[in-house]
Image (tube, rainbow, N blue to C red):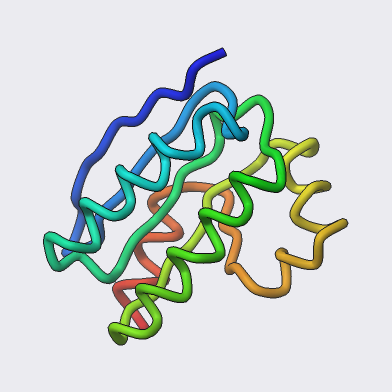
Amino acid sequence: MQVTVTTSQHDGVFVLAFGGDIDVASAVTVRDALDRVIAAGHHRVVLDLNEVEFLDSTGLGVMVGRLKAVRDLGGDLRLVCTSPRIIRVLSITGLDEVFAVHPSADEAVAALSAA
């Protein structure tokens, strides 16, 4: 399944909502979407993973790399996820301790806006 990306902005926070699979085949699409956002000067970013059905190590690597990029620029990147399967992947890899994970985009945006 291909990955889909929709974007929006709320209170100065850029939100990218992904759907489908984030894996070795789609990681370039995810990376390019994030790189465009960061290059445009958006350093407070939310990745909404609620419609993601599968996430592999390549996708995780892209997310970690972009987290480092925005933090180096003084920003932050938050995740939105309620899928037990994706949350389990984050937990197994220890990335639930690296990323702040929120149940909704509104909560993630509010947390970034307050930070």
